[in-house]
Length: 78
Image (tube, rainbow, N blue to C red; front, side, top):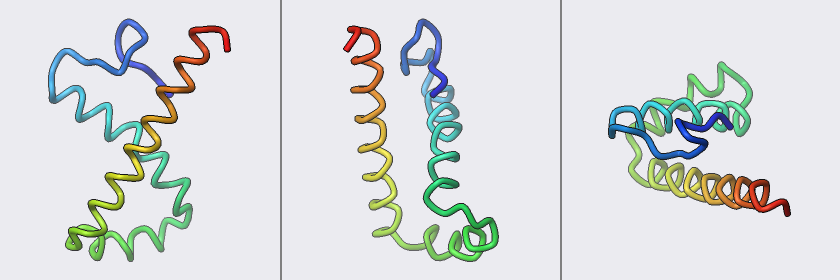
């Protein structure tokens, strides 16, 4: 994962934070659904389904937590 300035996920502005979140989320989406055609077919359904969006947000939150724990372990030498 590419970190923002100073080796953190903290950014100078909300716009940069959002851009960074999107940049890091895209590979996750591709890993979960590697088929480009299937992703394209499912995108309209997910875009209009609040439950799907909440679920996706939850998945990303779990991944961010795991990434933070991994980074913390790397920094502490664990």
